[in-house]
Length: 505
Image (cartoon, rainbow, N blue to C red; front, side):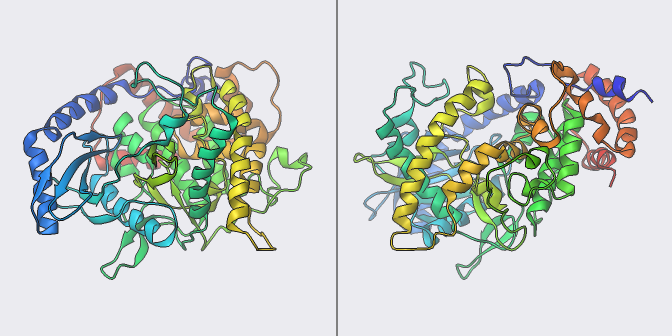
């Protein structure tokens, strides 16, 4: 068997400055076409009238639509005036063909928003009603917050074209930035205080109690369906929850394998990452418990211990960022919106410094991921200063501060734990992040001058003989698939069979 020859055929060839893996263009085109059809339907006057009718029936009062329709990333919102209500409401519907799990998303989001409002001081719009059935499908009716703007618009650079992604204003004053960062830190600190005994999504019972009853619905899962036509059958079952952090790290690693099967990505790195997850190494990396990584042998600073692997998990929001924080005319935090893709997750996620400090993600940064890191490191100091001030205010009068989120976040960036969790949560950024920021931290320095396309050769010996044996027929099949370049609607059982062959459990 010529492992090196075969495995080399699946190494991604891309530009060094483009850290984002290519999306499946065929799936993207198909999704765009479907979204245009759905958008036209959602923007019909009849849809707006039906949204008003849904609200009127729930409140048992006259309700009318008030333009304009608001279109967000995952949702479309209809402004509804209800007789007898001063502020009115929003009827929110998931955007078809963007939101891939519409019923789950709506039910989980409604329950989560209510939970956050009930158990934290984070300002959250009241959710009056939500469900997975109405004349327009899954829906949510929530309080309308008026006269506010997005925090992201207060801190971003000026854009002539609003369709261009926002980036942090490089000339923003330190005091203004810290003021807004502190409001975001307030939210992250309060979320970190919540605790759950399993990993998964929140559901609300008839008696207004909350429990973890569904799979963790994460952004990467949505992207896998929306952007890559990956079959639903290879994702975790809808009712699946997890009892340990290690189990969820394995599930995330297996999603990377799933993307590998149905697209064309780095085989070696993903198998190594899954192996580390199964060996329970990922959950302790970068903590004082870490005795396995190469960097742990040379680390001289005292580190915090890893959080519990069981029974204590925190609420993690994949889409919590300044673009979902509303600021009023007095620059106060008026509301945090859009709690979709939020779930009880390993506490490790909450201990990482936030990836949105520059508004744009590292793999899409215009001047490259290395420059993103340089700018991020500078802005992180400002954010941690804001976090420390909020921690002091929260703990005023307390002598024993046993848990400082700012300390964990600082350590996360220094040790590279930030990058581990970033890679775990994003299949498209995974390969670049693994080789650039994790590989040498895990396994030690590589030989200098190794070409990007040959990096896998430096670590292929870490794979077991069984793993390498399984690759040959898989690679042959992938090369045939790559030459065809057709969009396949996979049979669920065939997809699961292909997936299981590469997991070889």
